[in-house]
Length: 206
Image (cartoon, rainbow, N blue to C red; front, side, top):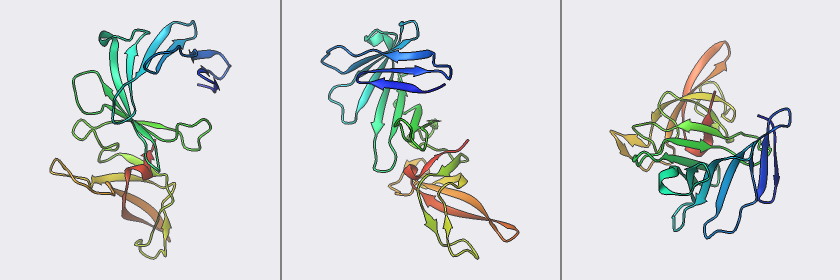
């Protein structure tokens, strides 16, 4: 997929050759903020309406251009923090836990792209499962690596070994939710070490 163009309430998504793939026309007045995503021929693909009286910014997603209960397919809730914005996607399947999370920087030309993560069936409120590969996106220094005065973690890739905020199925109030294992070179040896990190300090690694 190529670039996008934006102007007021209208935007278009183009492929690498400049052909339009999707577009959104200027919205008409409505009691709720409503948007319709169109394909290149102008046919409606997805309708979106902002949910009224919601504690968190929430959008209802509908199939096609219809805005009725039978066409509802998902709800998208925003979770903006000082570090990394994220949204949770709840499919309209009767389950109260999120099915996907989208984390990262959504701005045009952002340095770090957004990443979609499938939520765990057992702990859907956490973006990363145990065993997931993650990358540190914040400048964090640690001082407990043997024979190293300090190690800068930003840009390093590691593996989630434990969700520290989850114990025997119960969610704890841990500020640093993930225990992540890293490896670094010390001389000719690969040295493994752990660091406790918060969700907003990590992104999914390919």
